[in-house]
Image (tube, rainbow, N blue to C red; front, side):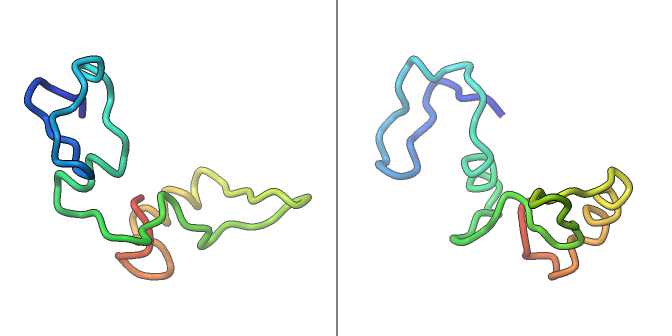
Length: 80
């Protein structure tokens, strides 16, 4: 979950900057390394959320149920 010496930048193919060693990797990078990244993948979907005063809200219980069910839109909906 953190950059190590010898890690390669996925976009350029070049070694990462030494300044990044020990820093946390972004979600996209972790998913790429696990072979789970695909273009258009959202970090979190809005399935099951309700709007309140122009803000999207969701109870903790609804969030946990959505995680277990892999979202209402199917298992490839988002990265949750």
